[in-house]
Amino acid sequence: MRRPSSLRRQAGLALPIMLIMLAVMLVSSIYLLKASTSTTLTTANLAYDSALGKEADLGVHKAFEWLSGLVDKSVLYNNLPANGYVATMDPTWTVSIAAFWNGSITLPPDNSGNVIEYVIHRMCSFPGAYGNANQFCMQTTAKNNAPAPVQMGSSLAQNAPPYAGQPQLHYVITARIFGPRGGNVVTQSVVMMGP
Image (cartoon, rainbow, N blue to C red; front, side, top):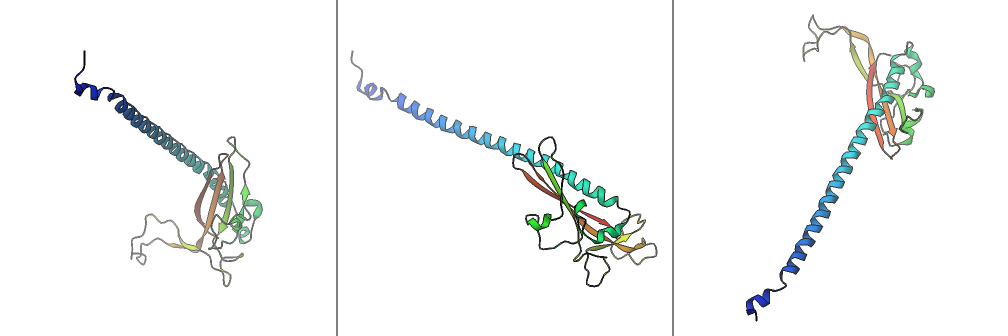
C-alpha cells in the first residue's frame, strides 16, 4: 500500500525537532546549574566574610581592654610597640600601606588557623603631651554627668550639662584577620578618652 504524498514528506521530521528541543533543554539546564552553583559560592563567601569580621573584633576587644585598663595615661605620650600602640597617626596612610601596621601585635592563630593583628593609633601629629606647642590632636570636649543630649543652641542655658576641663583624645583601633582560605577582613573602632 502506498502512502499519500503529504505523509511521505512529513516522515522523519519529528526526530530533528526533538533533537533540537533536547539540545535547548540541555543548554538551559547547564546554565541553571551553573547559576545555582555561583549563588551557592557567593552565599558561602559572604558567610565566611561575616564570620571573619566577627572574629576580627577580638583584636579590637584586646586593644580596647589594654587601652581602657591603663591607670597612668601619660605612658600614651610615646610609642609602645610591645602593646601595639603608636602615639601618632599619619592621615595619609591607609590600612593597605605596610607602614600603617608598624608597631602592631599579632595574636597566635586560633583553632581555625585565623591570624589576628591589631594596632592602636593616637590621632596626634607628634609624640608627647596633647597640649605641647605645634601638637595637633583630634579632640572632643568631654561632658560630665550629662543626663540627656543638649539641644542645639541650649549650651549656654543655666541647666546645661557641665563640660570637663580636659578634652577626650581620639584613638583608632584597627584589627585585621587573615583566614586560611585567603580571606582578609579589616575592622576599625574609634575610642575617645581623656589624656
